[in-house]
Image (tube, helix red, strand yellow):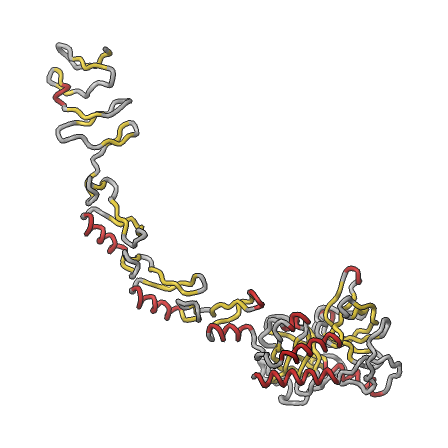
Length: 451
């Protein structure tokens, strides 16, 4: 593949060398008039799998196409349509591989497509022979001087703007209206979405001018922008300088698959350094180390092999994690998923038949056990016992000693007492509130009186 890339770089540089510089000649030969039809055949419509598209121009007979980077930057593959030069309607359709040079294509907004096979539709019709000799852009013989475009020069633009439906080749004329600070050409020729990546030539001589790229609004009053031949030459010079270090141009899906296996795909987002953010295909998830995409079933099995039948896998933090299924929980040392009741049993074994697991685990991995409602810890915290404590006026009191009764006055502090301390005429009475005394008359019931 590296050899293919090197050959591609050389081919592009050779093409630029034969583009020819702009000529100011006003002589229009028959060959230039015939070249207009050749230009039309070389300009293709581009439609890519990610929904992007635009125009492009064939520059070699083996199907090398020059276009804008923004036309194909996120595409895995594209279809290119060659027009009938008389009508501009689709005549041949081929598959083409996007060839984007990292960083440089973004910087210059220039990229390449390479036709690699013919297209066959759902009815079985094949739209063109492959391999074949493609109609490349033909540089007229008159293009030979080093003259650059001048203000007022006539320009012709070929492309597939959305204003004409986006599928039919459209030709518009204009003049060189101005130049930007970075040497791009501004033209009055109509350029719209879809024209990007097409062809701009001198209207009189047919010499190559550049690649229609965008529309500038505001102060330029919707003038079209053309990337000139000089900038394209700079782009190709940069590729030539880096040709020994270029790697095969891979789609973002391929980059993900190289890093994480065949079940990884590009998420559609780009991270740091323009690197694709990868995800797993439907039905797959990250393995436990986050290094590859694996089937959910296989990861569940790995979790069960390590943590028992109650374990399962789930994605988290860019890798697969193991957890416990519903009805299961981690054991005390976090090495196995056990049935929820088994943790209750551990608590019962340690603290008696009444103890239950609280659902919490200490930092050391041990279970936190507790007592159910109506029970409390024994004095030495070794077992759950019946909670005999009482509450009085919002305060909790321990149970009274055996043989004593608990007394809670309407206000104040509760107390314990022996019932026989407060008998009167054969009946038991509760103690009097604080500050009062117990009075037992000669007959009748006892009462409390103020001292």
